[in-house]
Image 1 (cartoon, rainbow, N blue to C red):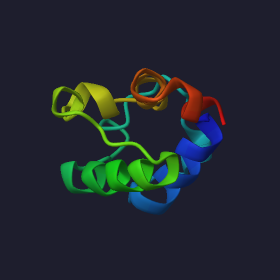
Image 2 (cartoon, one colour):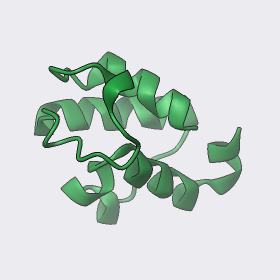
Image 3 (cartoon, rainbow, N blue to C red):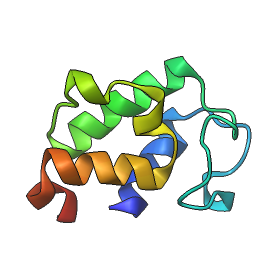
Length: 83
């Protein structure tokens, strides 16, 4: 799952650093993720995993790191996140 998240982050994150240089628990906002890019990333994640983020997850904390995104996806649709 983290590989898919990294690929989508590479496509939508518009980060000034390479995604491969980021640790799974590294702060994506400190690495340059903007609010606009986070929304684009969220849309990409929803399409890739065929899920919809609930309103309670639409915050900076949910997209703060690759681990945080993975945890949200696992909570939304555990069976899809494993695939």
